[in-house]
Amino acid sequence: MRTKTLITLSLTAITILCALAYEPTRTTIEYIYTKMRGGYTVEERLEQYGSSVASRLRPYFELAKVNYPPTEVAYLAFKDTAQLEVYARSPETASWVFIRAYPIVQMSGKLGPKLREGDRQVPEGIYQSALLNPNSRYHLAIRVSYPNSFDQEMARLEGRDQLGGDIMIHGSSVSIGCLAMGNTVAEELFTLSALIAPTKTKIIISPTDFRLNPNYTHTEEMEWINLLYHQLSTELAEFKQ
Image (cartoon, rainbow, N blue to C red):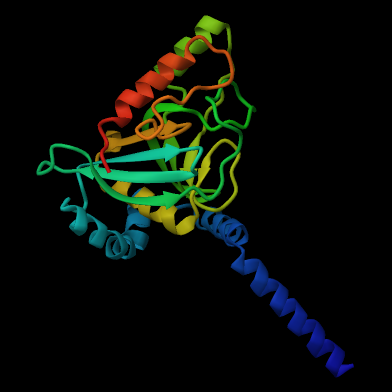
């Protein structure tokens, strides 16, 4: 009987450890604890993660010869390669400088813009950080300013409403319409954005890297999509790796 009890306890312990090793489970537990304590402020998150993030990122900034923290950052997300590139600039650097790239852990939908709420699409366009969420269900999150004026105008012309929102760049490894980056990367992106002025985080989400694929075309027939992709191509030309 004692042996059976020990085996049961051992199996239970192994199960718990395996569950905790799974990032979404850890993130859910953290979220529950965060709610119970009344949440964190952005400043408290900076105190919590700022030093460790600085130790990880400062070598990349030193290599790029950009001050840490910078005065502006840009996050360039490419759907077809599931890659997010970080660029930065400071008063000493007139142009954007490449810092590093991260894999996008999870994103839903397919290539092409977001058209309506519930379509599970990650939007495509030129955005900025709308706010920082230090108490996200997915660890930490940066809200993307979707829908922007272009999204709204194209929807008006086509008679579309209910465009959706709450598009985030966040932690964990699950996503519906957002970019899930894993918790460690989310801490780095969140901290970078928190250290600079709220409007100084540019976010570009593109189906492909038009710097490498200038002739990329979309299969769906939308009169305005070529205009969108021309805007993205022009904007991306500012960023040289």
